[in-house]
Length: 154
Image (cartoon, rainbow, N blue to C red):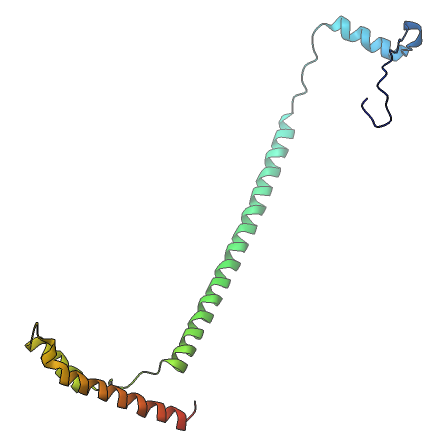
């Protein structure tokens, strides 16, 4: 049969009818099958079997729906927790790193620069002195803010 220990030589096996033994019960079954002529009717499920199967399928579906609802509830709770944690983290980082300046800095100088640009369209060099003053004001504000942070650590 193609095994490792088989040889390439083939040999024929001859079975004689005398060598085959059939039990009387097997002979009887063969006779009945040949006399019947028709195949036996397929076994049909009874209505009780079908209703039992349907009941089982409904219970299974209800169980899966209950599991699905439970998983969805857990997912919703986890999402809410994650959203709250995200919000708290953002607020903490904003409070730590993005301190707002009350009223802004150098608003008067900024307004003068904007007015100059509006009054001199196409001639931005006319406003260069005001821009320099604005930049100086912003830099002074940054230095003052940095000194406050160094002297009073958060």
